[in-house]
Image (cartoon, rainbow, N blue to C red; front, side):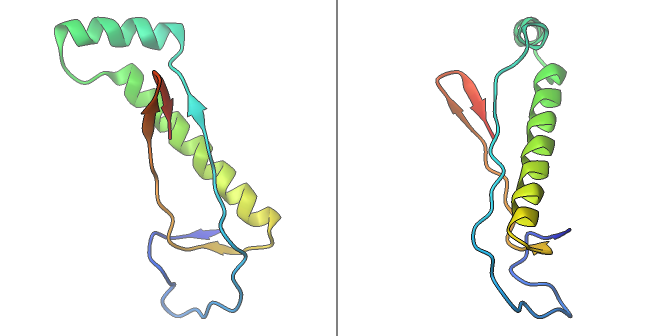
Length: 93
């Protein structure tokens, strides 16, 4: 599956739009990630446990996006974007 953040693919013509596709993940840190993140907040610095959690969420969201596009018959995704937010202590991204 071709995926780009651009709104077109150079050298290719878009012949049909399959509509909006998405990959949505709501993730909370594991107990271990929460403990390690809490300790790191006290000492300061990069919170590796949270970085790993965000990376996992993005990978899962990307995989779901590709699955959704494939199910609609698409062979490419244009205009792909990541978005993340915090909702009541639960990370959404």
